[in-house]
Image (cartoon, rainbow, N blue to C red; front, side, top):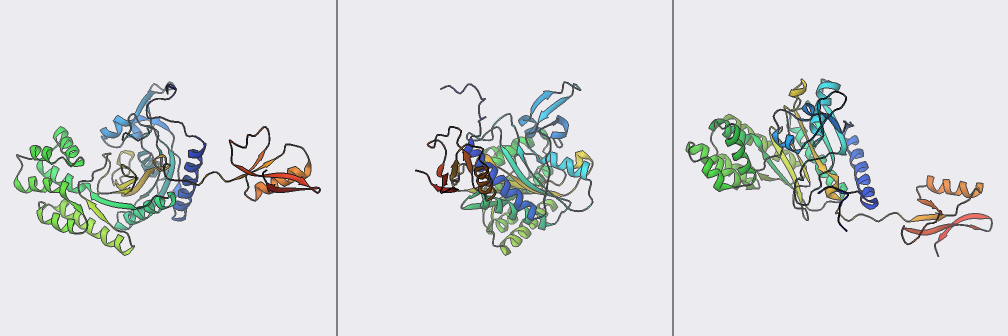
Length: 381
């Protein structure tokens, strides 16, 4: 049958997937709370200027626009929750110390992030504001990996990069506007031929450094090898030092680290470290995070910030336990029957009152029956 009801890359969430989504959401938010994160719930729609940070053309293209009939101003459906959380930290909470915030909610995008992606992801994440130390990044990565463990993701691979390496060399090259964007895209795609063409007129140290980034993938040796070929710029040295420091902190926690120095984020608000989690069976990253230290600048407070997010809907392909077997109870007004149903539900049982249930369509394996004057649970015949 032709799927004429829903737009492309938009789909319903049916009972089994909905149960899985809600189970993961609850477990992750409970985990974040144990780390000290406070949950916030920004609105689905805002004035479009508050949904975008700086001049983020990538996020702008992904944002649906509409007109507010009350004011005539342009509004947008959020395509990313991070700018909203930054607004809450900078403009509403206005705390002086470190603030930990978590969130979970739907976003809507004008285009999918991939062939298998949905345009209405269920985004969940955690963010730390007000801490520039590497400890905040370590905590964000730990929490991201713990979230994936809760969801049942196996064989997770952590890859770390630093956008400061590209930015430092692009600044030194004087690249702005279109050429900078072309180089950024070429590096994202590891398109060495395009980078060679764009950098052909640059001084040799800059050209060699840019061409080294797409090949800089692997373990600790990548940092040493890359440090030897990148141009000597203060921002480059600082970025490599941060990567070394983060690696050492993660290793002490038993977390294996891989580097991909051509790993660049899809949104422009990131400013430093970027980290992605990949897993067997998934075509793209299952979780993404990084530094976005100036994300609150537009809202009046430029605070250090780091965090991560993931799409719960992308994880529903993981095998999930079937519905808990339910108890079928007869319909009636008998006080003892009603009391028995309430007691079972209070004990965590699922009790379905028979209003015409087809036991082949729902998972029922027991029934509540009156035996010798008492309501008892017995196997379903």
